[in-house]
Length: 329
Image 1: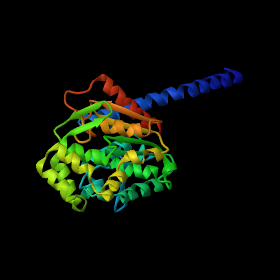
Image 2: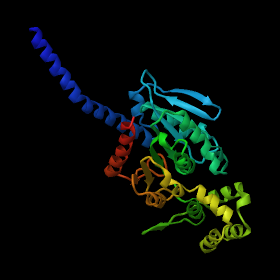
Image 3: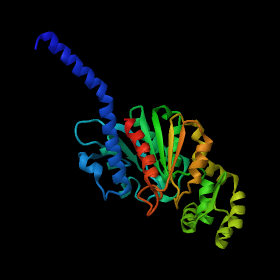
Image 4: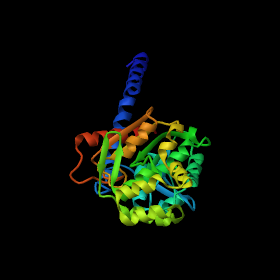
């Protein structure tokens, strides 16, 4: 073959590779996303992504933050993972599994401990570890929050010092209103717009949180709790001291979401027994633009499969969420 022919063949091959690259990358992203979702939904019983990827590298950034990086030579895309209510903080076993899975998917994951969420005494200043983790990440970081970890995550994403660093915010089982979440746990009632319902409730959870924040519970609220009557609980919550209501507002993502620049994806289980899905609807209504709500039956709260629930449609919706996250690398 003559040199001009060789050159032409090489140019043709190069052009074909250039044209095919987006397809190959999209296919790889889809495989990684599907493997991630399979392993996540089965809580590791189906280690699909673990079979395809090297074990992540784990080290401590400082006493309060751990870092999970992809194994091998590839650098990970920056991500901050914010845990929910757990005494173990960053050392919670479920959180560690999620961080490792995200690292296998190609992310460089920072996991800070949120002190208030380890003691049931969440305060606005608990956003500081998230802000610090974002400040230490390159611009374009992803922010993923779990359950009530939405409170410090949304406060951090709205903070002017790091708001521009957040490329996207993904919240699993988030609450919009701290007050409505307390009402739900005390009475089982939830409502937003035309969505209304009543679940079993978890008064023991609410009581534990109130005891951990005893200075915020006035006699009227304690008396209402003793009766367990929904009407009395509602009346007591409506007459909370101004200082307590202000604190509840500060810990409510719906109060800060309008100040967040990044696109937001809210994933919620329709049968979530810890945070009702009406809270994601309430949160999206507070900033409809660039906010997407994904309601599914394939998850209960923030992990695992709700037995007998969900279907192909749910799996496709969740796959779309994971694909969007992985493709953002």
